[in-house]
Picture (cartoon, rainbow, N blue to C red):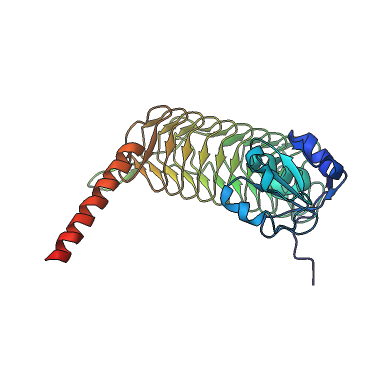
Length: 350
């Protein structure tokens, strides 16, 4: 039977880890200790590194078998002396850096066929331009006059349409399709993603619905990550744009003409309808829906399951269906609970 572990760690010394993440290594005598895995604190084994950010997990500190723990200074006295201790002001962020050191291949979809160049089983147009150090796996299709930048990976079954441009060090995952789009550098497109297909546009009427031709593009800027089976429609009469560094979860729908700013986070099953605009650093939680033609300001946050049908101010937090500001939503729910409790008490006395 094969080893059930899919990712093998690149061992790192505790001293090197502390240096790379900017942590204070309290147990300096353990600086040569090699870290060979990463685990939750309650399940950690010898050689593993873990972290504590939420104080609820402090109860596992005494019994953990981990070789090292990353935590804030306020929790450092709860860590046994036998365990390597790294103090960092943001343990979760530091742990993320450690994972990248230990498992550098886990952050991007990996090639699946083992091919190191352009597969004989791929279909590539003679007019396509492919720079050096590109992998194109079996079953991939690259259309006419498409261009692929150096260091990029087009994995098995992926389709790159005519005139599409893919930047450098970008990965297009298994069975993903990219048409009518320009993709930047260092973009991660996970398996099954659909980019650049028709937007949903019809001139509706009693005699039937006339299709509005979708003649725009999709622009995906540098450093974007798009989760599996998400869809980004091309614009109808302007471009659909996803800003630099934005992270999109699995099963997210982005409609035509949408503009998403830089470093936004859009969580699974969320939907953004056509011509909506999201500013920079916007967070849209899971299953939230944003109607078309509205503006979500910089740094705003939309709670899970919310339905947003109005402009949201920069930094504002909204939640609910229909959405409202968080304070109003909390007051309303407290009042409803109070009314229900009084009604139940009244019914009980009757």
